[in-house]
Amino acid sequence: MGELTQIIAKYGPHPELLLLIIFLFSLGKSVIVVSSVLPPASVTLLMGILASKHALPAGHLWAAITLGAALGSLLSFHCGALLCRNKPMAWLPARFHAPLRKAQLALQQKGMPLLFASRFLAVLRYTVPLVAGMLALPRKQVYLTTTLSAALWAVALLAVAHLLPSF
Image 1: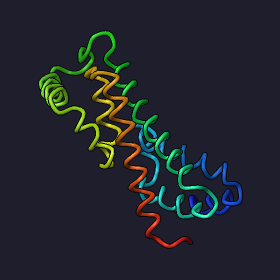
Image 2: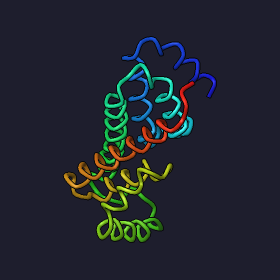
Image 3: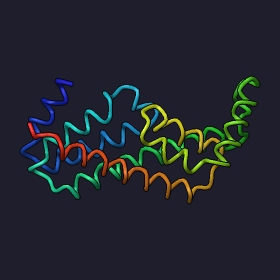
């Protein structure tokens, strides 16, 4: 966490670079492999928002977080689709077929609400879009749901940061 504070302090005078860092972090926290090595998203993004409160307009921060989060989830979705492009589930051991079919049925019935809600839960943020891609959920609905949830998540982070004092 100390390293992130140093990065923010170093690039704070350069709002464009700080905006890029916030975008990249938001993107990284929504991609399955990258997310595992980064610190908690909410805490770090809040630090970035607070550090840039006076240097960047709220609309720019919202856009950077929303775009990063949506693109990261869509990347996970397409990675899942690539994993199962030729023969869905054929590469998985047989013991996983039944649970995956059960997940497929649940996602087909309640997929979009589950995809929307997953944005607000740490591990589900990147696993649900991955599974949605593996199960070939409708791309248009996934894009819309992912973008709406990312936009609301960004609003929530900005609202919390607005209530906290700048450092």
